[in-house]
Length: 250
Length: 279
Image 1 (cartoon, each protein chain N blue to C red):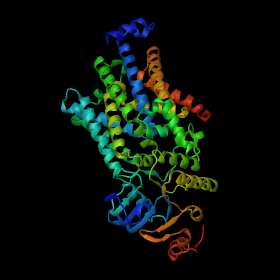
Image 2: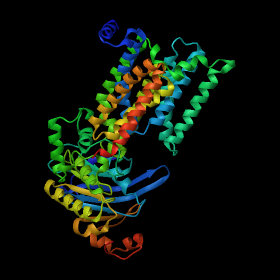
Image 3: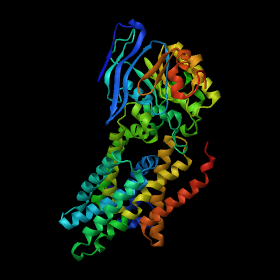
Image 4: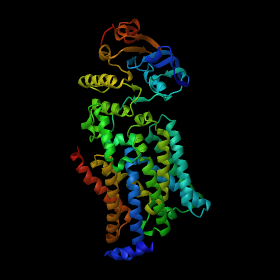
């Protein structure tokens, strides 16, 4: 497995470069010959049918899965070798009975002080600052199990943004979120991307957001079948073949 | 102990005239926070059935210790429980069976092995009653000292590890994405429960051990809105039930362990009635 910053190729504008990536689990080859570039400040949407290897690809980028090939990062202005990656996992909802509020969740993730002793004033202020980024200050004392799909994604997003990452990776952030919540969440991601100059890599089954928000779409089914602008991919022969329909939005 | 006895003499309670009641009260004051804390994580992590199975494995360990003629079978039981817990964690991580199915497999095997060993060669089962029913009233100063050590160890463990354990329990994927080794965390907690359960079994007894490990947390979960309330209420419920159960058992002449369990059950019933009141 290789994980390093690369320079050149796309110059400083390339934030993540994936070259000849393959992932094999047991005897099954999940991904092969995947090549992809994510430029800085770009929102890249990864689409594909169920079982296409999208989540496996994200895990390889996160370093949670062994792979062959090259995953290289560059980060202008950052001296550290390893990039900071913010990750919002595909989220089954929390148990509604869990007596854990949003502040507790942040404390468990970010603080060394045991969350069961309650939050210090400084920590509570910090949590409010984090939630402010996703317009979710009012969620701080809500139990995580009672959050709606959209609220939960905002909270997980706020967690992934602390500390501010170089790349933000989201696995199916729109699943379980209603149409209104989808629009609000995508607007927020767009705002965050511009405010903090982040690259965003996300998987989704919701093609309706691609035209408006994605800079690049990558259609994947074990390997890259098509990539380019949203319209190019949605109009491609590969898209029609995989999803058994004509181009355009779902 | 002499300081504790001196404090007891100052208290205007008739039952504290007896040394065995003083010992039992001190043991309960130590066990309540211990079980109250562990209970929160056992309930959140859906491990109540597992803690019961661990109690059974501890009993088997004690039977092995007795048959081998070891002076202190408790330590054999601790080792056996640890092996049981680690083996269970290993099998669970490599099996596609549901956790409760595997617990059933391990639990029934442990019980069968314990009874088989205990009755080997026509041996009597009577001497194991102490571990099955338990008798808090016969707790010795040595056992109280050990409970105090276990409590201190669990408190230290809790301060260092509870954030990671909580995150692992409520959302393993999120915990993993934050760099927490989920499997290792679960194994460490499992091993900790194994040690605590086994060391407590002789004073509490197998039959009511599980109620002490589950009911305080389950009751607190009915009404708590955050982790602070959850832990605080769980410990308070365990304390109230421990002391209340001891008083009830003294004046009514019943088993202290059973009385403590019944008070806990009552607390659960009351909190259950108020569960809808929370936001």
